[in-house]
Amino acid sequence: MVQKRSARRGRPRTYDPDRALREARDLFWSRGFAATSLDDLSAATRMNRPSLYGAFGDKRALYHAAMAHYRRDVGAELTRIVAEEAPLRETLMRIYRYVLDIYFPEDGQPRGCFIVSIGVAEAQDDADARRIAAGAFEAFDGLFEKRFRDAVRTGELPGGTDCATLAGIASSIVHFLSVRSRIGESRDTLYAFAQSAVDMILATGQARAGK
Image 1: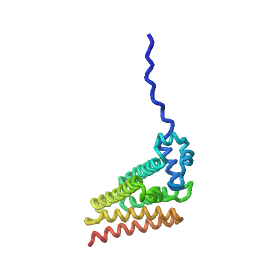
Image 2: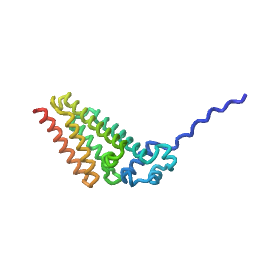
Image 3: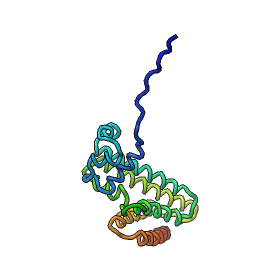
Image 4: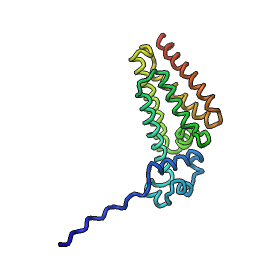
C-alpha cells in the first residue's frame, strides 16, 4: 500500500521578529528615520531587502512597527511596576529609575526615549507615527492617573486630589528626563531631579486637596 505524502507545510520563518524589530529600533534610535537607509536596516537585522519587505513592508512601515514594539515593551514593564504593592513615592521612583535605565544604556550613548526623541520628530507629517506616539502618551498618563486614584483610595493622597492633573505632571517629568539625557545631562543629575519632582508631585497633591 502506498501512503500518501502529507501536504507540504509552508516554509518556516527564518527570522526572529522581536529581535529584528529591536535591531531596527536601535538603528532608528541612534540615527533618526531619514538618516537610516534600507541597507543599514538590512545589515542590522541580518535580513536582505526582499525579506525585510516581506516581513514588515517598506522602511516607514518598519519604523512604525519598531515604534509600536517599543511602546508595547515599555508599557508592559510600567504596568507591572504600577501594579506592584509599594508606597506611592517608591512606585514613582521605580518608574523614573526604569526610564533612566532606558535613556542611559550601559553599552552606548545616552539616547532618551525612542518615542519622545525620534517618534515625535516624524509625527507632524506622519499620521501613523502621530497615532502611535499619542497612544503611548495617553496610556502613560492613564497609568499614572490610575496609581494616583489608588493612592486616594488607600489614603496615601487625600480625597479631592486632582489625579488627572498630577498624572500630566508626572508624565511631563518623563519627557524632561528623556530630552535632558539626550543633550548630555548626567544620570545622577537627572535622578536627583526626579527625586525632587516626586516631592513636588506629592506636595501638589496635598495642596490641591486642601483647597
